[in-house]
Image 1: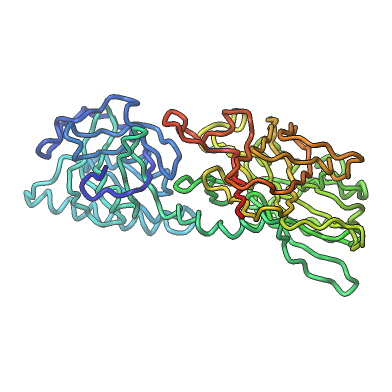
Image 2: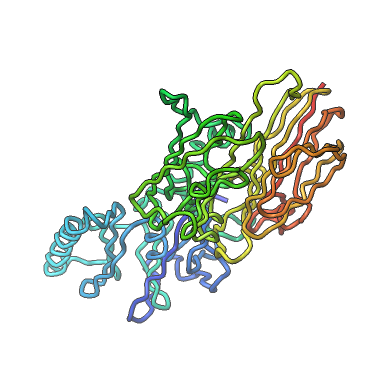
Length: 473
């Protein structure tokens, strides 16, 4: 439902605690507002913010808690008690601009003093946006010690879109950070298809890679943005793909706010390269680098991941797939399609110790996971890795059986036919199948709360650990 010029989006709300009495709305009709705590949740890019929205009984006007909104969007919001004004700096960079921008606010305060001295009528509560006095469409209001501003003011001040979503009873604010979703698409597709990061080939034939550990935005579904722990700006990190016997050199640059290291899960390598802080190496401190060097000992499906502050770093994206292909052989089985799936999730509105609210395949939740699109009779290999910190996953395929051909990087002697496979944390399985049945078949975790996204199941929608196998003639 549109409200005035409110469009699809998501906003941050921020409690503004003030020592003053409540004021009534100074705009016609706004006194009839529903301000019941918790009834109208506010989200910014899918993240729940503290405080509730107030919506008029005719659903025409929406008021949002200013400070929660502004700070979630990275702005600085301050209260000037002398002038009864909220100071908003929507271009806040603490290390470089604070003094300059506060000077701009001081200039605006001088203007307000002059206006008041001349008898100019001011609103009950003033707004100063980026150093200039701002006249909103609806005057701000104080309710229970919290300053509320209109959805129009939020859109103008922070360059976002706001929508009242009646389906989930939320006021949703969407910032430009949601453009991140489209930027991620190629990275998601490359991981899904097992396309590896291109190495630099040294003069001695060594395959060299560079991995940068950093924080950044990531979208498990469109319209939801979380802060992920990433390698090379993606979660999971890029696939590292080499051939059995290759000499490999991988440099880790740490741009995180805390130490880290990389463990090469399942590989046979020198002990000092195993990547365990305090055991085989010192932690790699912020701003420092460490180079791992080893020979790709045997073919298989493996992982790489942090082993520092695991619940936070590993639980929020700091991992990737490492595939060692066998040396070319006449006996090697070729598949028409190969897919790679890392099973995990994100804590968007839950703590690192709680269940994830967005379970993901390669960092994406259904319905935004890529599909497997094949022709009838084609063969498929799927590399599955459960990188979750706590959860087991039971991946089930509808309509077609598959065979387990490898476990933890080693071929199985007798492939077993099945349609559901239980994968514990840290385990990898390779499965293969022939697409012998036309149709759209679900491949999903059979732990049902792993097949929903935050707040969706009450509306019958599915999410989480689901992808589709689409078989056509």
